[in-house]
Image 1 (cartoon, protein in one colour):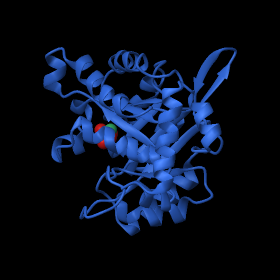
Image 2 (tube, rainbow, N blue to C red; image 1 turned 90 degrees about the horizontal axis):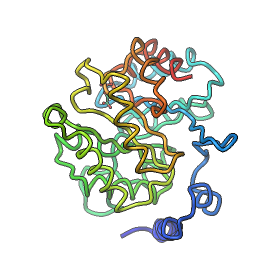
Image 3 (cartoon, helix red, strand yellow; image 1 turned 180 degrees about the horizontal axis):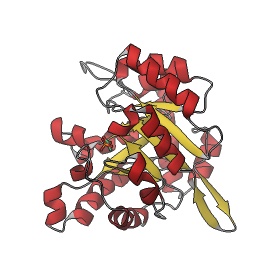
Length: 285
Ligand code: PEP
């Protein structure tokens, strides 16, 4: 069961979506988000950039402390690039204590689609909210492939995150087999459609992460990324940020971020090395 507040927020969002209210209306009206990810200047939508680190199942209290110290010391001050870190659940408290009052946000790598109940091992959106999370990744390909998360489940997680006032970072992406069969467009469109059928995308963030590029050292070319981002963009309102993820490193980040429909990155392996991650953030400036 959803809490009364979650039910209220969910219903309000649904109503806003059905009435065709913009993200800004919904947010202003309901006070659901702290930041507006887009600006309109002379009729052109300028989306703020986001670089999010997905630590996956890595770290310890000691190594996290060192990494956080190095990031806080080395990340540029006012850059116009938002930075977020997504550690494993047990370290959210440590990360939140270290990052509170700094410009770096934090989030989780997954959540339950349920509000509460007998779901052993699961973590709810409200729990993440209590830990100060701003973001939560949903539908990462490792969740889809290793834990069998379906499009419908990912969409339910996306809606649960939004209802609790978290910003979901929803991942879509094709496998190598699907790309080689010419099915990239069909696959990412289907994954995004499942979310849009369930929820108003609102202030959510989309991440295009070709599965063949994740953790393989083989990134999509900037042009390949741009082509998919452009077609995803057509399904969304112009203010939605679309991140690229898949073997982004200091050395290839600038070229990828230079693409017009790439609004930042979701960074796995390279987010665990302070120097590398700082360079990636600089490349997004
Ligand atoms: C990821 O896991 O989201 C990711 C993009 O990983 P990597 O950067 O290591 O390819």
